[in-house]
Length: 135
Image (cartoon, rainbow, N blue to C red; front, side, top):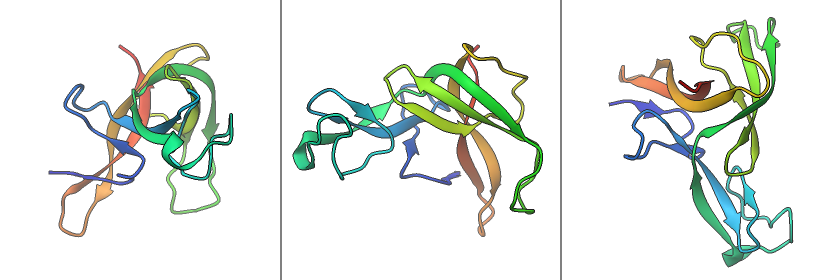
């Protein structure tokens, strides 16, 4: 069994094992956002019951990427690639590229995946969401 690093931001559903879905939301006006929040819709201002949690498919188009060669936190291993992805469902998200993914270019299709990022105190793998090239 593995543990999700940020279980409040994504889930692994039975539909596509290994392809996490992002936990965003949808307003009654149709606006889709990530992450889920209750402060109010960025589009129309509605709040409360007008905002409902929605699992967003982890598929989208790469808008931009940047390789980080030196991070301010010296314990953070570099290099790693930050990606900006327009999800098919609407929101634009920033995340990391999976370490085993080859170079990417704007316009390329990406999907979510889980990557082991460490071990818990009990020895179980700790997994986190990353994006990788769509096969």
